[in-house]
Image (cartoon, rainbow, N blue to C red; front, top):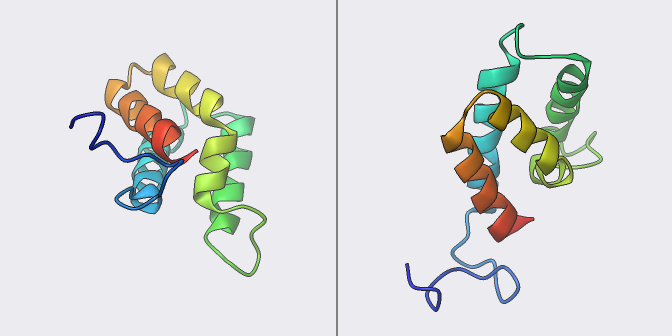
Length: 98
């Protein structure tokens, strides 16, 4: 994709699937934190926030907002577990949607 054709969130979110991208990263995140050897108190609390984020009547932030606000922690988790695909997806989300 040429830089001229690349989606630009500052001009328009048209053509950027931020919701879909955030759901794919959340699934990837669960792949790690569902493993008791990889989770900790932070990720268990994050998991609870994600559960509330699914309910529009209860949430304070949606999944995308939670991901963007915690991008560095998520990147650290992916780096710690050598998840290059997860890191690439996270970079794309950060560049296009956060």
